[in-house]
Image (cartoon, rainbow, N blue to C red; front, side, top):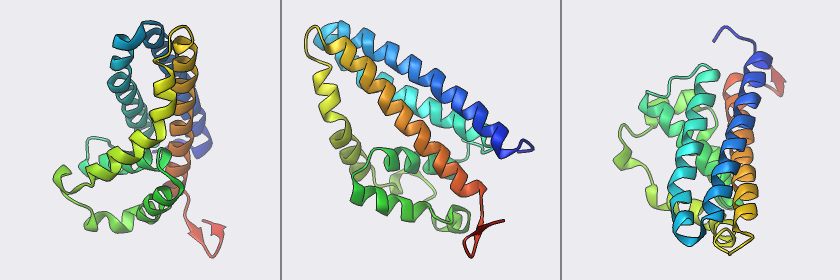
Amino acid sequence: KEMSLLHKEALVKAKIDSYCKTGAAEGGVTGAGGFLMSLADFPILIAIKIKLLYEVAALYGYDASDFRERLYILHIFQLAFSSKTGSQKVLAQMENWEEKLFLLPENSEQFDWQTFHQEYRDYIVLPKLAQLLPVVGAAVGAVANYQLIKKLGKTAMMCYRMRELKFDNGAIR
């Protein structure tokens, strides 16, 4: 919490870069392994992305062990991988997050898991199907995973900036 935003973001960028490389390696290996290994890519990639978001939250000074902070992480995930209409809805839910904390669900049963799953699935289906192709699957998997993690990292940075920076009549305070 005591670090400057500039210092936090330098650490976050380094973390994102590290996770992009890890995801690319994982996508390349599972893509090269054919259909059966590519089936393992989906859960492994989700785990990598969620772990990245937990570490980004920690670098910005937020405690991911708090359920409501984990909801914020899910909203970041949803924002990064939703349609334009879906992302606008999610962004509206995330604005003024601290003021909305008391309105948030207290457990995971109240979260809209179906919409979350459908938006994510629809977003990644084409690159992940291309990863199943023989010969090119490794390259497609590496590039797709790298780009998906990079997009998630950038989205996370913007979401935490939104929380860190307060705006009064268009000016940052």
